[in-house]
Image (cartoon, rainbow, N blue to C red; front, side):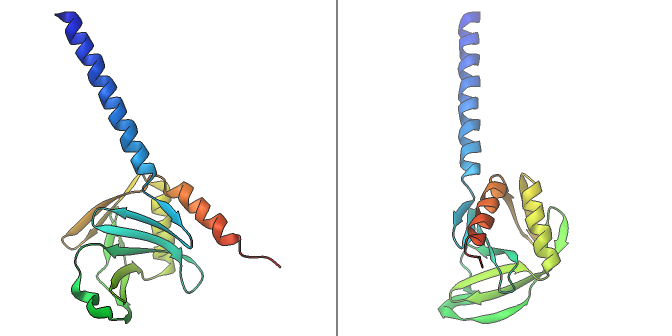
Length: 158
């Protein structure tokens, strides 16, 4: 009887190991370089890293749930939205519509730099805005960001 229990335990450890490997592999695939941007779809959000109009890098947060704010292709200029907490730190956000896409982004360059640093130095980022919350995996962000920066620099020259 003991032998069967030991065999069962080995099988359980093996199964959990495979599951953890699969989870890590899928997390590393969660950030995708799609020039000229990096995209990650997680939960109810898409996170997009792209160069802003001012030339710096910026993170854009796109809700994936039904959002009637931008219906019928409405375009409106960015305006200050409710701030959100990212791993507990309050960041001022702006929101805008581009066609049917409603998106948020940090209102200041300091906020953008902080968020990028947070994703670089964390395994996950917890977003809380009012009663909305989402845990966003940061695994794989660093490698994808480096590839993004290399691809962004490949168009320069004398």
